Length: 80
Image (cartoon, rainbow, N blue to C red; front, side):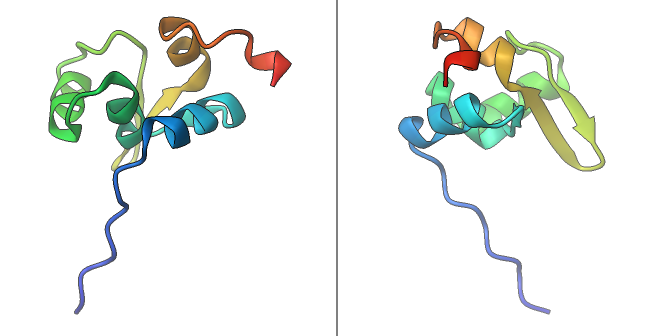
């Protein structure tokens, strides 16, 4: 059975766009925004050490966009 295609690492600009347009992002976007590796963000999520709340849905981690926008001073999400 072939391996499923892996999602490429987003650019910070792509991640900012998703923060501004989606109610939640995944850890790949958060890693791009924080400028750290995905493995670092995965470890911090597992250890509950991220600077924003996150939660799991099955095997997937979700991060609400509003706290990320506030952390990064991205402005009012309602204005987008």
